[in-house]
Length: 247
Image (cartoon, helix red, strand yellow):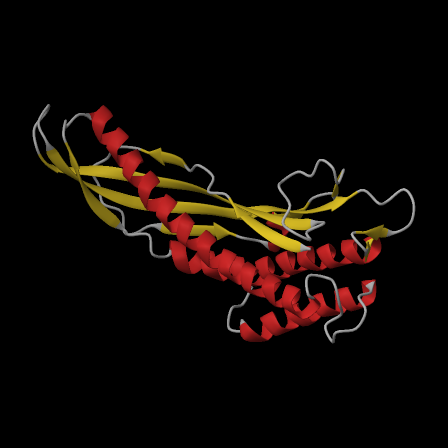
């Protein structure tokens, strides 16, 4: 069994208006509440038609999808240039709003019609192991998503300059939106990458302890109970390691 993280950069929505005044600095609002990561209903599949190419000895998987949407208010202050001539504008970012959330889904084959074995493994244990991955996603997101997103988006600059080839209101607005897209997409990518690395670290520790669900954490025969116990142990170890990050 394995877990796979899929990370999506959702397109930002940017609201900008041309102006002449300079704001004191960007106001930052980041919402990465634990409730934003939704557990989806389990997704069952026919083993002959899996939803994705399966790895060797992989019978089920857990997928985490993180979404990050951003909105920004900004204005442009034209410093130089004439109409229809190149100019330089200062883009002042007044406010940035960030919503971090996503989904967690367990993909598991239909329970065998006869017996309770999938590739020689108990279907109940298989399902319990993947549920352990799902719980890890939720616990990790609850602790690290908010502080990581707060720290990353706090890097958003108060103002930056751009060169505009044609100094018209329409071109200024277009270039401003393009540069805001580039800026906030880069910050989003950084936040997602950092959250991803923690997800991967904890899930890999869980899989190492259980040999991907083929044993208990102490090498014993795998059971529903010891899969849940191993997941809890991986979560507790993670919480100790990342105790400096407060939800």
